[in-house]
Length: 165
Image (cartoon, rainbow, N blue to C red; front, side, top):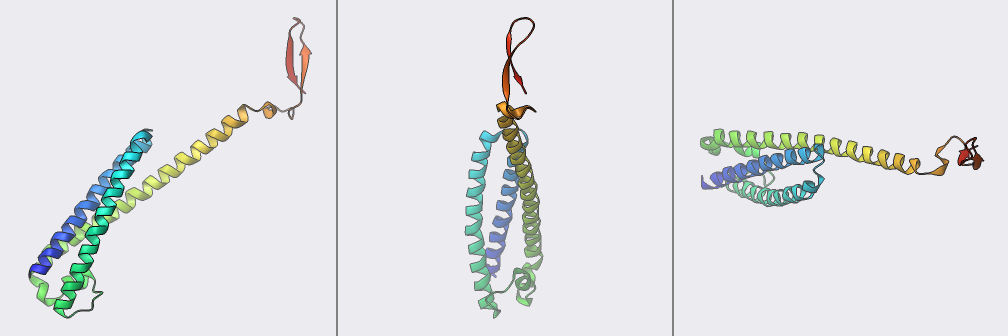
């Protein structure tokens, strides 16, 4: 069935894009870990392009699956698993299962990588906030225990110094 072959090719492309996205997520993690933030913008742009391509491939897949469901007399919202298990698709079942599993693994891998990157970014942002807060307090005159009250005092050498009360 030619339609099933088209679905298989679209699923294969879908898996390839998710695998490509995983490599970009690894690049993203390395940029965050190595403070290569100048690369982060280009990596994010590349990921957005892949996600855009994924949307197109997934629309094509949904369209082909709906068309195959119509030809086979199935519900229009049939799942890929239901389609794979249909008796008239048995000749293609093994190939579709292998590609489907590859796609599922790629999606799961991306989910894990993205979760790790989100955690890493959140920790980095938290560190930057704390660093900025600390740096802002260091420059304040009231950073002493004196509550900000200062007086000029002459020390035995005759020099004038500012001292906290």
